[in-house]
Image (tube, rainbow, N blue to C red; front, side, top):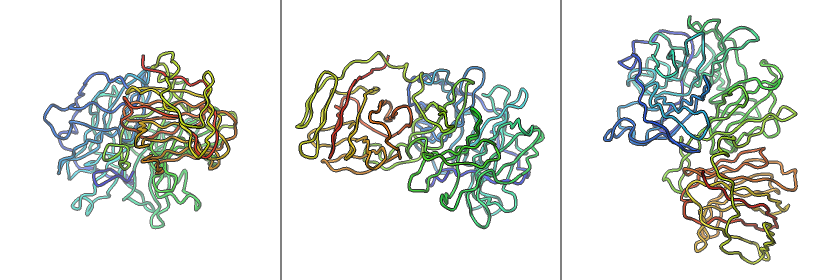
Length: 518
């Protein structure tokens, strides 16, 4: 994925020999800092000591989930808040969880290399089991001038483990782009065993050369231990209508008679994680009418299954500066959705049961004030703006909160929730249902003026929708009818009032319930 000046963009593919690694090629020690209880966690601070400037704080980048022995092993690119000059970046760390609300932080699993090595920057990859051994194929990224004069910028590298925690880099493995493909952009290997042909598949994000068409290129092998990966051609190529620059962080899996192909793209007008579906791994791959699984603030999402449920793991972008007016930045908090298959094979997302179980039974929220055009009857709220705006303001929120409600939007205007609301300045973060525009939208509200921050296409086919909104660690996630998820960054909600609103159209809210953590 293309990042900022510190960020990784992942690696290239003909099998060649890599030079010996530094001391990090030895078995990598585990640094266990204990458990983190959070719905949308970030890695703990000071995991390498009190004074080391590189490791004091960090964020979660691309997540590489793997399920084994009753636990989800959530490997991720660690994005350090401070990056001293001359050191590498985005080493791979791990969270382990069994319930999606309590995370055992395992520290660093795969370190970055030296400035003259292919993994000076580490990028996205995946884990596959072969017998009793695990192989972690990941991206190496190095665009320093001395290095790229003699080497591809990106390549696929490998580390091995017997226990998913102690990883050893293979110094003699390096896969780079074959003829006809671009070795500057060659990254994000996704590896799995394809029972249909009895081989292991590796899907790599790259571009054709010289046409620069984004493709997912397939390599196969009968035995990863032999490290003899052969290119077999593209699995998917961006269409002229899409014209995506890259198909990042691909994932492929079979569920309920369908094959699903996920990828993320960061260059179209509607950025985010998308999916394609087919009845065969060979395609043809069909784009559903709504091919997004979330908005652009959840990125690089990949999946893992425990055999009963399949979950989608990605990161919610942070902002810089870290306030509601800041600009979107790479890496942030872990966000998890459950993937559910519809009768027609399309996918929908819902809140994982483990997250919902983190909250109490719920109470009716306390009203603070209303404007003209709001009528309350029991737990039903009618919004009929006399002018252009009707608003009901409710009690202050805690740092972690969940609310649910049934909303019947009008056919015009917009309606929804405002968090971190300041009635004096009419400021906050607005989450809006906009049926006339067939979308969910997030706005910065400042002195009554709106600035669009994020949106997600949604076809409003029903009269009434069940809306839930969960807030934790500066992240707010909306689920609508357990069909779509809409993740956004929202700071400074604790101790602030929240509101329901309707603008330039009517709306009805019922069964308002506020939940606090157990």
